[in-house]
Amino acid sequence: MKHFIGIVGANSDESTNRKLLQYIKQHFADQADIELLEIRDLPVFNKPADKVLPEAVKVMADKVEKSDGVIISTPEYDHSAPAALMNVLNWLSYGVYPFVDKPVMITGASYGTLGSSRAQAHLRQMLDAPELKARIMPSSEFLLGHSLQAFDEQGQLQEDTQIKRLEGLFADFLQFVEITAQLNRNVAADKEAAAHFNWKVG
Ligand SMILES: Cc1cc2nc3c(=O)[nH]c(=O)nc-3n(C[C@H](O)[C@H](O)[C@H](O)COP(=O)(O)O)c2cc1C
Image (cartoon, rainbow, N blue to C red):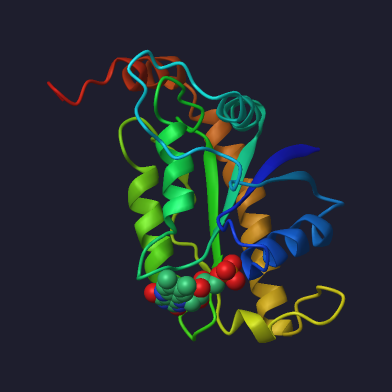
């Protein structure tokens, strides 16, 4: 069975993105083992000159590295991914490169109608940076709008159309992980390239 990491893109106690990932973990438990990671305990990225990373960052990098894929659920703050989520990605592209060639599925939830579409586009762009270089599942968005009303008391998604869409996307993600595993000729070189990338000359 595949082992995925789910990154909760919010650092607030009451997050509908956390609820969405908890739902995904439980709903697809027979298809994949999903471990949810929180981002709220990481310090603010400060570009340490010696590249000695905080322990919590090392642990997260290791978990992402060892996983078969990552699902990130992002809120939308001011038309962007939250600073706390960007913070994690900054850490995970500085002296460690666990996202290089890693299959990633993006989901998101927002209170309004658009379901974090702008934050998801923003996140997609970030994940394509030279030191992240994830393999983001193409042509796929899971936009959970009106997220405060989307779940019942047991944390179950209420709308059938949303459940069916998520099931389709998750099945596609499992396939996407298989396909990307075959695109392996440059994985070592891609890691090297990320590790040696230098913004001063790049
Ligand atoms: C500072 C701030 C900015 C926000 N900006 C947006 C926004 O640009 N678009 C949006 O749909 N919701 C916005 N929201 C509302 C929700 O926080 C947002 O819909 C979020 O995706 C909910 O995710 P969560 O339940 O995981 O916290 C904003 C909220 C705050 C506090």
